[in-house]
Structure formats: C-alpha cells, structure tokens
Image (cartoon, rainbow, N blue to C red):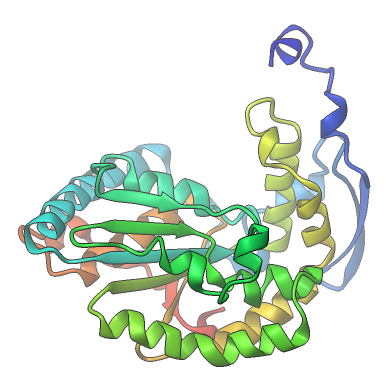
Length: 304
C-alpha cells in the first residue's frame, strides 16, 4: 500500500494480468477489452448501466438510497430481536456472476445487526479432507442455530456454475448435484429454517466495468484475480450453466429470487425489502418497508 501511496501509477507485479486483452462477443459484436489499460473505453462507460436489459438509465440518487437504507436497517434490527426472542432461524444464500454485488449487499444487510447472532459464511476452496466428504457436508456445518441469521457469500451452488464451467468437477458430479439439491433444500425448509435464495443478475458490460474498477483501485485490487479473466471470457458458458441451474432448482419450497443488480443501490434495497416482507417479526412496519420494484426483483428463470 505504501508504494501505491507514493506513486499511484506504479502497479505491483502481482496485479499484472497473465492475459491483458480479452476478446469478447457482446450483443453479437466482437470487442477487444484491455483490462490493464487504466482508461475505460467509452463503449463500456456508456453501456454499463443499461446492459443486460437493465430497466433504468440512471442510478438511484445517493440521498434517496441513504435515507431508505437507514429505515430498512432499523427494521432489520427489529427483526433480529424477534429472532432472538422466538428462536427462529434465517439462512440466505447469495449467488451471481463475479462482481454482481454479493459482498456489498451482504455488508449492508448485516451492517447494524448484532454480529454475535448474524454471521456471514464465505468459504475458501475445499481442503483435501473436504474434497473426500459428502459434497454438502462443509456447508451444513455452518447452518444457523436458534436465533441466528446466516448469510452465504456463494454456496453449494458453486457446483452448478463455477465448477462445471471451469472444469473443477466432472459432468457426473454436476448432474448428481442438480438431481440432489431440490431434496436437500426440502429438508432445510422442512426443519423450519426461513430459507432465501438470491441470484444477483449483472449485465455483461457492467461486469467488465466493475472488473476494471477493481483492477485499477489500490483499495479493491485484492478482489481481482485470474478467475475473473477466465469468467469474463466464458460469459456464454456461465449463462448456459445458470439457465440449467434455474430450471432444475427453482422449486415451490425453495424458489430463486432474481435481483437485477447493475445499480447496486436498487439491488440492495430490493434484497432487504424481500427479507423483511417475508418474515412476520414483531413491530414490522409495512409502510416503512415500502413496496417492491417489479422491474428489479422477480421470481425464477422467467424473470431473467
């Protein structure tokens, strides 16, 4: 950090991409994108927000967002008191492509909640021991106990996206997962856990913009990795894997909630609203929570 502070133009060797220029097919057009060039191309800057059929041409204003977020966070604190008083359990998994906004959404969701009873799970790659276990085993050990609110920044759905696309599992393992997961999630719900599955949906050009921001930020460059590069070049493969996952794991007992996340502010508010509107906690103020935006949040593969 000190070297960057003295000379912001000097980039550590570890930040240099193994592959700098990406050749991408975007909306039927071949584009070259140099991730190491500090200047963001105009076509990325101009097209990011509306990419992927995002319904708004402007971000939500900072003032409106801040005021609304604070009111919703007050409701979250009330909800947590209810969890502790009643012993209810909440578990939420966040999925989406790289840079879709999962981490920031989880941070704002949990920002003012008591961390003793509200925790986040972000697991590293499995150890040798974990690779020899039942696939779901290392996730189950992090499930909530009485009065807990648990979020997962990525989950067992790695086996439906990252792993098959990048060759980290076999086709047989992928197929077995898709067959088993509806029954696995039925057990979660049957045990009385309030279970949410969010997919944050980001447009392709917005993803490139966020990757570029990470690559050239002295504060966020730790988020940038070769996996990001591999993912950017496999956009269509990820889309195919996502669509199959949605079709086979969107169930009545554990539905997928889709949130369009090109505008992080709208996405975060949509996620928090959905949680608050779904839990019958004491002191819930429906007027304060407000109505959902049907242009931003919807259910299942039909909303993608």
